[in-house]
Length: 345
Image (cartoon, rainbow, N blue to C red; front, side):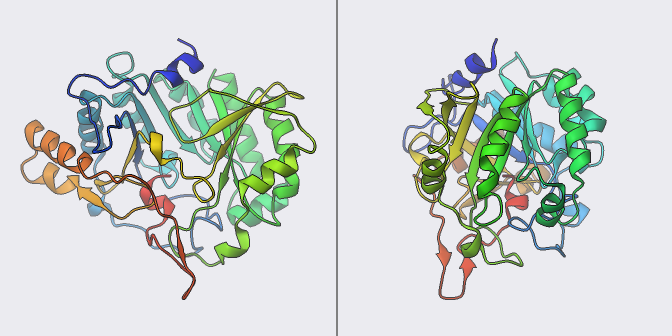
């Protein structure tokens, strides 16, 4: 099955599937396996973050149980996120456990990573059935890369990309559009990605969690960015989907694809098929809302398959129609207080 065929198959609900109040089938689960990261990207985290104690985290076996319960209810795409998922101790145990579902209800197991650990894990990820990953990359300038990530090593990420492609893993680069930081680099990022056979998705920065910087100064609407890029490139809209919110175009000059994720300028909620599970067992029904369900307490009290299934059904029955990313400009605080690293991207 090709990536395109796989991507287009996610919306088909199964019998006893998870249907939200607006008739949308929930077929995509994003799972944050840790809130920790070995980078401190300026738009995502404060430099001196306080992370969760180990006792609050779901064990890898608990994560496996919950993910498996969602797959039983029709989740067909599973994405591991963080923080940085590959810094979780013994993470490959979980990846291998989840890989057993591929072709047995699960169409795709994938992850989003900053690339720092890929050189170490790429071969094993491929062996576990991971065929496609997203790698976050906001600049091709090593000095600017260090500035935006605070702790990151650009060359190490490049080695990770090499290792993943050598292992046969398809890569999509994720780039957060940041005003006066990487807007002028977008043509070079497109050419870099497409020159290596990778897609590129550009994402508007989202106001989640308090950080050290003012996001209003970072925000770059993708409508403007796209208009600027169309002075240099010819875009053709595509129906291609990967199961997420990106809307893709084909670039005539390179033959590659560019995706745009626009939570601020365009509400893509009408086709939302996603929920997010945190490393503490909290199920967020929408990235931009605070309504959630505590699945950890279900696991650690009753713990039966029936109790877990009931808790999941109840949560999905409360999934909202859409998100609401608003910055409280009276005190310059984000409307959603939790950090992206906690929610899971």
